[in-house]
Every structure is written in structure tokens, then in C-alpha cells.
Amino acid sequence: MSGRHEPFSAVLDSSAMVAWFDPADEDQVDETRRILDGVARGEVMLDVLELALYEIGSVLERRRLPPSEIADDLDLIEELCGAPIVFVPWLRRDTAELARPNRLTFYDAAHLAVARALGVPLVTLDRALLAAGAITPAQFAGLLPA
Image 1 (cartoon, rainbow, N blue to C red):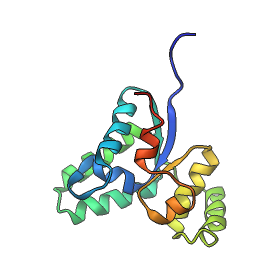
Image 2 (cartoon, helix red, strand yellow):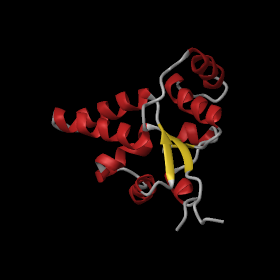
Image 3 (tube, helix red, strand yellow):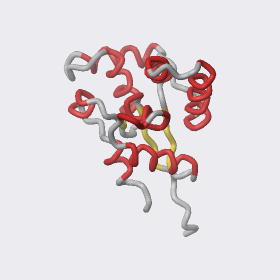
């Protein structure tokens, strides 16, 4: 046995990523940073929806960050997580089937649909998504090697 482990994988929504860029009023900052450190060490692979980039951009814009900093932060997400997942037809159908029964907004249901399709956890701070089976950054960070 080589001692090398397969990376832990997850889908992150914007609520779990905001603390990377502006931790002032976010929950579970240490846990989200631990996940980010795991990405840097190759222990964690993250997927994000293209939608999450729009959500993060909106949050950073509301916080009055300079446009170049917003763009740099969005570029960093793509650098860390790879190309974002786009809203293809099969994803639209899965999302539509998950939204109403789980009392989710359509865009929240999209995150859940991707995580389920990939067979990985959805990491979020959103209460409705947590009620639908997602996990918190603290729960995911607790799965990572010490």
C-alpha cells in the first residue's frame, strides 16, 4: 500500500465558499478554510455549478469589493475547482424533480441534483439544503485526514 489516498470529493454551494473571500460575518470559517487547505494539498476535489459563480460575484459586489478583486476571486474558484458545471438538460430535469418535494428554490435544488448525480455530498450552510440531506463544512471537514 502506497499510503496515497483518493481525494475526498464534494459539491460546494456559494454559502460554503463565501468565507474563503470575506470571513467577517460567515459561519464555520475555520472549517471552510480547512476544506480549502485540503484542495491545495490534493486531498479534496470540489465541484461547483456555474450558478455559484454568479451568486459569489453578487455577494462580493454587495460588499463593495473592487471589480478586479471580484474577478480575481471568481478566477480562483475556477482554478481550485476546475471548470464549473453548466446547466445541461438532464440537470434541469433532476433539479425540477427535487425542488418542490424538498421545498427548495430551483437554484438550490440544482446544487443538490449535481451532488446526487456525482454521488458526493453537497456542502452548504443553507438550512433548506441541510434539511434535504446536504452537510455542513464542519461535517465535511471532519471527514478529512487530520
